[in-house]
Image (cartoon, helix red, strand yellow):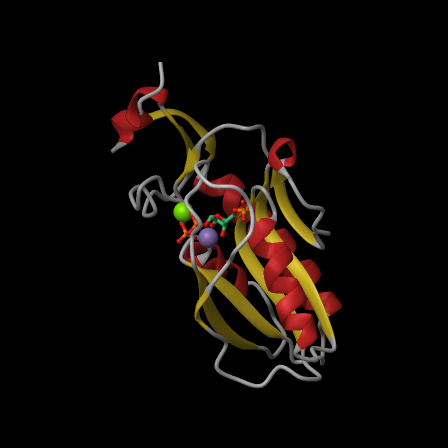
Length: 180
Ligand code: PRP
Ligand code: MN
Ligand code: MG
């Protein structure tokens, strides 16, 4: 698996430090508000597990699964909810946890849907953001790192469902996905 990685982009330690920093900020901002923290599966599962353990105020957690719309091959648009949040969200303070904001289409759609259900507030925490690829503007409240337009995997992020279990974030060799 390591042979498929061109370069380690963020080490385990760099990730842990950033997660601790984000957790501390979120702890302060949500103290005594009992936020509902929602992970968008699957990509965010590792970040969610690490981040929530750095949040030191009571909270609830939940998960959503949304359909992938075929990265790079289709135009923006439809996002389908495959698995929904299991508790009522009206009046709740929601924190959406994502691994990466790429085009922004997924998040833009989700935030609109959840707001329409009467959430009191919705904020977004994403570990990574690729500004060069944003197609719609999605405000990010808690950001780990901005990255260039490179194919990154690990720490939950996949290429064709592989590499999610890497403990670091790495750049994939172009040869792995049929590049030069
Ligand atoms: C990836 C990533 C984000 C989304 C970002 O998920 O985890 O959820 O794409 O893309 P966007 O900003 O262009 O909408 P993917 O659909 O690959 O599913 P996964 O999380 O199960 O890997
Ligand atoms: Mn995802
Ligand atoms: Mg994916």
